[in-house]
Image (cartoon, rainbow, N blue to C red; front, top):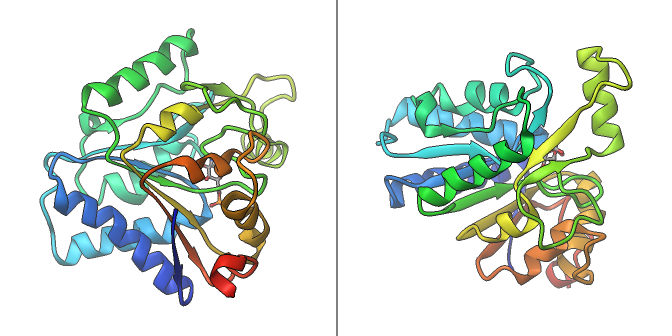
Length: 246
Ligand code: GLP
């Protein structure tokens, strides 16, 4: 793993934004996976701003998000579809047919998972996956204990996140919610992965993911085995790393 530590949050956001732009400039039909969350909001904004100032060719670029909530309409502002569309697709003029996302409402999510995977592989696979990390080490929505061999599937969500979604959407406690996510194996098939994290609340999990044992209990630790993975973090998220702070 290559570890890059940004001096501060602003530098982190800019460096991460340039990983996305760089991939688009390098390969005009790049297939790029994104992640939602607080970590990525600013970087998406910066990509949009730079495109606004100095437009580049996005006419062949494909975007998707690593995961999506199930059983809530795409119009819910917390759906990954809605967030990625408004944060980056619209400003970069990525049309619907080059924004690859699973359906959020459907009768057969297993089939939807296969369709999602097939679409990405028909495009030649994922060139770049920008990957956030959850407080418990989850990547996409793959929670601790998810087998490293998992394909794209509907995973349970972490309790804190699920509680927030239920609160926001006011769905009943027994209404089935899940997270359709690229599986760990599917994520590992990306040609390049950039794991991104900022802030001191991510320091502990970054240490476990980067320096701890490779274990299914910390899904992100599998990235230690990826041949082309960069860990891009700010100083706070890097603060417990022995390798960086020696
Ligand atoms: C959610 C998303 C993940 C994301 C994670 C980190 O769980 N499904 O894809 O990586 O949040 O979120 P944040 O950046 O807000 O910490």
